[in-house]
Amino acid sequence: MKRELGVTNLNQIFSELSETPVASASIGQVYRGKLAENGKDVAVKVQRPGILGEIALDLHVLRILSPIQTKLQNLVNGLKTSQEDIDLGIALVDEWGRGFVAETDYRLEAQNTIDFESAMRKRGLDAVCAPTVVEGLVRDKVLTTEWVEGTRLDKDASEDVPRLCGVAINAYLTMLLDTGVLVSLYIADVISNPYALQLNTNMHTIFSLTAL
Image 1 (cartoon, rainbow, N blue to C red):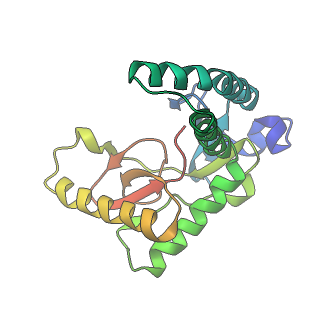
Image 2: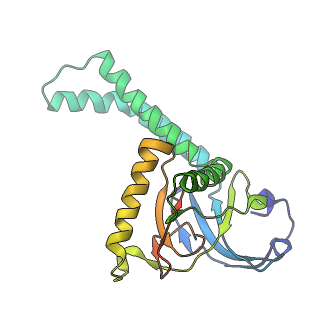
Image 3: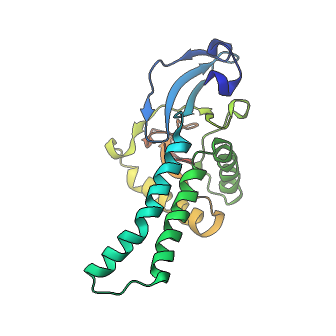
């Protein structure tokens, strides 16, 4: 993190930073921090070291195995395997791989977050927003956004949850059919900690652009 942010001591940027991740998954992990310059609570998403190389290796193995899987699948179904079948299987692996590799581009994720927020405002979807990006703290492998407190939507007993589900469906359809940027859903009040599906009393629907 220090290398990505160009500092020798993280205290130059954060007055507080959790020692252990508050969320973790295959590509990255998230720490909670407080900015030294203004005391703002933030979520700091950090990419796991060497993850791009691991993804490349996995994709290479999948490309090798894809023709075998295609032949076995066709054999089970009593079908002959053509070169077109094999090429299609490899093309599917390549397409999946492009999407997965794109998830490691945190600068792209930050820009998509900003673009998504603007798109929601232009379409009058005021109940939907994206986490505000701390643009000065975005790097290839580090993404910083504002943090929000909340409770997980799937564990909340609020009577407003069904309405918010409708808001979420509307937002997803807008993404799929209009904006073309698909993001992950979070429910919260102010600006998101973009790493947990959340809900609180102000009932804003908040999206984050990439899963961990």
